[in-house]
Image (cartoon, rainbow, N blue to C red; front, side, top):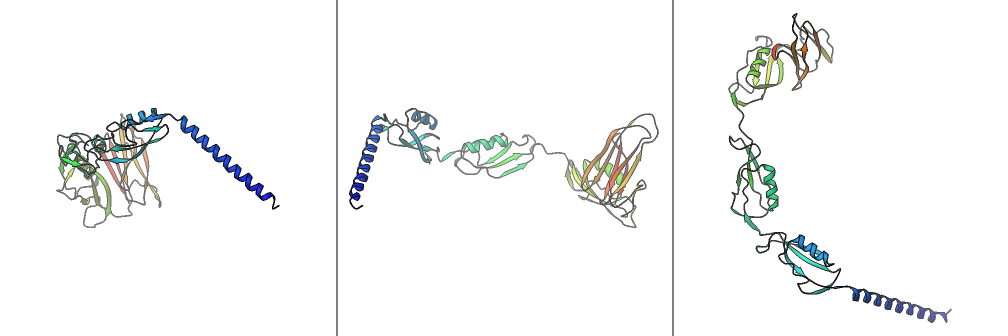
Length: 321
């Protein structure tokens, strides 16, 4: 056993020698057979052109970073390693630094552009979006830039966040809130529609000394200025728990409302609206034959109001609470 140890050591030594010699000659073969390449001058060239050039020469591109430069245009090469004229083998790396352009630039003119176009220009110039304020303007279309800060042409640094004033378009007509107090509910609805108001909610409160089914209060208050389609809330004088005379069936969940078209010869356009939970639901909107009857299920666990329009004119209203 002891005699075999020197033989084993000799075999292992021979194996390592043969492996090393083989690796050396293999590496030398590949190195000698790689084509030498003269590194071209890249400074000042566009990154896309540089990628095409170095790929065509069989060289790899490694981007070390990017820097601001007052002399080299954006996306052009500032620095390279190896330097121009050096001879390297194919497959080697060429490291480059790309220009981010000048650190300062004139503020772009964004006035008159829509907001989406302005955002694209800001991004292209390395600028962030600042505060966006909106206002009505008689001459500037909706979503277009009215003004900007900094103003166009002013020297700024990349990375700042300019503020923009954006148009909402032409200001809608402005009205003065009418006084609906004391009107019956159907009269109040007609007055609201006439004054470009949209009834949002109707609540019921009972006051014995006030006329039933009349408006006790409103929000916004009379005299306030408002824009078209302003929402308005009404409080109507009515005993809770008292149903409509047309409510024939009542339980904890629903009640029934009935409307019958009077006798005649012509069809009438009938629209039935339900206002409950702060929303308006159109339950029926069709031409209706004379003497035809409509039955509508009304939720009784919330204050609900039924409005009946004949040929677009309000002819009936009913409160369910």
